[in-house]
Length: 182
Image (cartoon, rainbow, N blue to C red):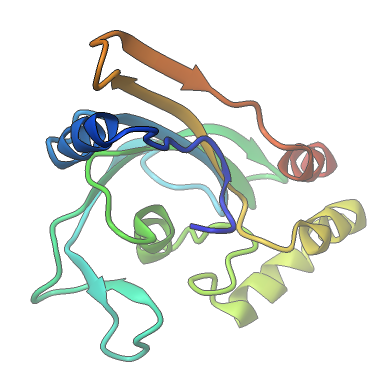
């Protein structure tokens, strides 16, 4: 997602590209994202499954489909809550890699990512935002994107075979939003 901050991997050679492509296909890549979501998911830790494909109502969106699509699974756990459960910080671990997977799955269970213009039902998000302190409303408006960050990326180097793991700190815009919620 272009408006997601954090880590990404790029291949610098054909051999690296081939190896990374195979690792992604084999689901041999560790990926953890942190997201601020509306509400408090229950249970606080779980797995979301559902085939993801193009939305029949809006071709620009992806959706969980009853028929068709491709299997998708997202593990999640609540890391923190703010404003009496109005907002939660959630770690999401991808078991598959579908377009907009975290955003679609979290919205599907009623906990859309803050600032998400595509899956965050604007009317509902606006009503929820008005219940936040003024500083949080200002920080959310300044965010200008979904509050989603690629925090961890781990994989076996496709050429050397070394196990690599990278961590990324939250960017200042999401950190400021969290501070305003505390």
